[in-house]
Length: 124
Image (cartoon, rainbow, N blue to C red; front, side):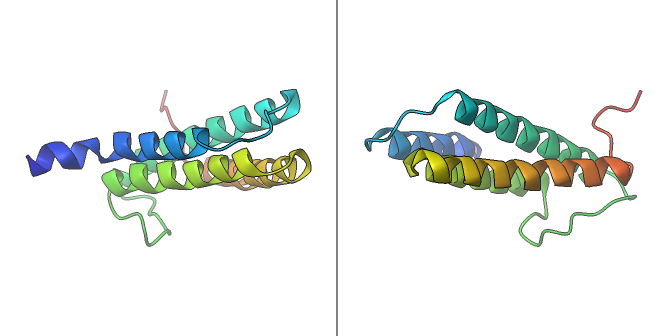
């Protein structure tokens, strides 16, 4: 039973974030904010795949002390992405764009850094 609950934790995390965001009134996202949100989520997916890939080898190591296993990687990434998206959900347009632009700069900077260091999602 505990193993089943352990596997459901990521699903419960997502449901909690979605339900908490959907429960309050907010200003809808405009087109620019939707694009910034999409690129932020895409960057998080790429960063997660890069980290997942090198966690199985000996050449690279994860510097984040919160991430020791692949299971923790998924929880930390989902939590961080959820916090940024929920925060953006409640902010006014001007501040929402600043937050999403900053988030994109950080995540894509990390992806580019990993790529230059030799981390590839797929090895052809």
